[in-house]
Image 1 (cartoon, protein in one colour):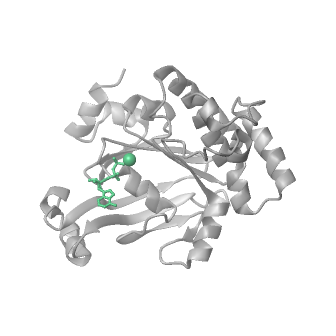
Image 2: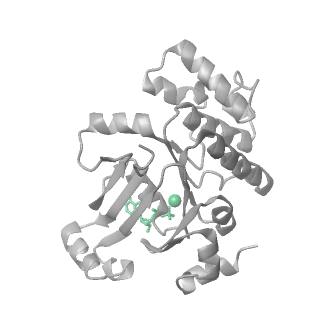
Length: 269
Ligand code: ADP
Ligand code: MG
């Protein structure tokens, strides 16, 4: 089953606003986001790509380019206006809510920029939260959450409250929670953007290590080119809702598809 793509995205489009049919028609004939502005916002336009199992796929773009909208459609948190997504071979558009929840539980976890920890629960309980949702029994939850906390360098911190931890440590808890659920795919939306540069680099290194060890598929969103280059097996560059280039870090550095990408590349260290 290793050949099944982790995610297949076909002509995925999200339009926020009035008259979605009309907007889609205009988009199909090449309208830009600006041209559609009177009707609403074309947040994602005709995204088309496949994420292989075990790769780190980075989506990079400036603020407002459509990254969060895209990632939220990948696990069905947000319904597409047009196009579709398959998760580990299963198409998710329009399926019953119960089935969608099952697919998410098995296949997809999410890590957020602002950690989204439960403030009144301990670090251990936070790490085990995904398992609780999956219906794993309490003794096993504890054991698995402790193991994964060790793995992310938080062994011994399980009884603390989130507020007692630094930002970097809190994000390790967020990562531990996603990893403990043991899904095939991790979706990470600007997961490290709130961290200090040094801690951020440490987290990037650790993520690559964990990914090699655990063989997860990761979709990682960032507006930071250095982070994209460091993490990405492949990088999709988004601009105004469209993916304007998709390639390896080297391809993007040496052959930027347009001025926008070239501008990004000039900022790299
Ligand atoms: P990014 O994550 O790259 O910063 P977003 O996906 O958050 O970009 O936003 C893309 C565009 O879609 C922005 O113009 C934003 O204002 C718009 N947008 C996002 N969510 C909504 C929404 N729920 N309703 C209307 N417009 C939205
Ligand atoms: Mg965003």
